[in-house]
Length: 159
Image: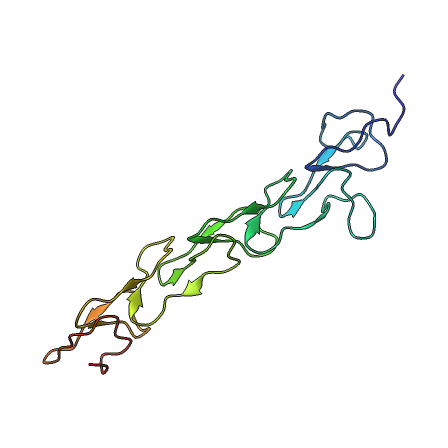
């Protein structure tokens, strides 16, 4: 005969009171329940008030993502980002980049460089006699009748 509370709450789940089994049966609160997406649940997971809850240990921090049933947050890889509470990572869009793992947001591409691809990790400097001033995603040729022997120009007037 099993007594309620005989099993500990496994990682990635939350338990209301004790549980009669260590096998999850969704909706049956006498068994462990999966931690909500965007949150993580460590063993015997309780919220900051000490109560068992689907939000478990804590909200997933920025730079990490937590699918449903997560024990520990997953770090976002370079070229991707995850705001706090994410259940999956997001690609950096053209015009932005993420140089490091664990970024909560993408950075705007620096002037004089281009970030034309999704998931950019390293901005590419504009070539000789090219510029990027923020009005475009990619580098542009210097205007007709102008030239520069410099690369990575932030403005057409910087010759």
